[in-house]
Amino acid sequence: MKKILEKIDKNEIIEYFRSSNKKFAVGNYVGAIQDFAVFTSITPFGKNEGYRFVKFKDLKQIGKSTEYLQKIEKKIEMRNFKNRKTVILKKEKFFNNLFEYFIKNKVMLRIIYKDDNVWDSYLIKITKDYFYFQILENPEYSSIEFVRKDQIKYIEIGRVIWKNGIN
Image (cartoon, rainbow, N blue to C red; front, side):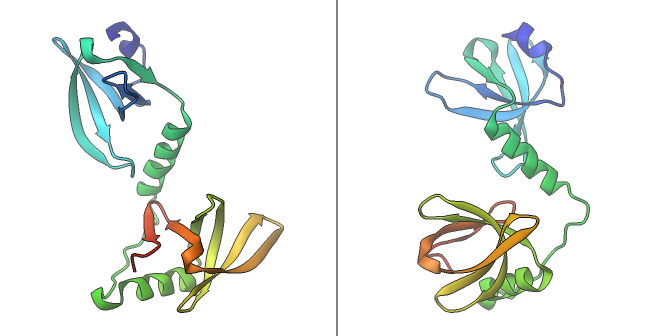
C-alpha cells in the first residue's frame, strides 16, 4: 500500500478505507512516518480538519476519481471561491432573512425533493406553505414552479441549509 500511495500526487484527493466495511475518510496523502500513512482529513463539506495517521497494515483500499470525490472537490472549490459573501442574519428571523437574501441576490439553489428528484433553481417567492422556484432546466428555457414545503427533502447551497421540518 505504501508504494501505491507514493505514486499518488500530493494534491490529489482520495478515499482511504481502514476496514472492509466500506467506511472511509477523504483527504490527501501527505507522506509516511515509520509505519503510518499521514493523510489530511476533509469533511463532507470540503473543510480541512487536520491530519490522520493510519497504520499501513490497517489500510484496506484506496479510491480515486469517484463520484463522491468529484462532489467534495466542487465543495472545496465553492469554499475557496473569492467572491463569497458573509450574510448577517437576525437570530429570531433566521430563515426569513436567509430566503430574502436568496431572492434579492438570485442565489442558485439545489432543490432535493422527497422523491429524490434534484433541480437547480432560483428562489422567487416564499409563502407560509410554498416555495416558488425558477427551475433551471437548460440555459434557453426555465420554468416557474411552486412547491409545497412538505414535498422538499432539503435545499442546498454548498451544504444543506433547509431541511423539511426544521425552520
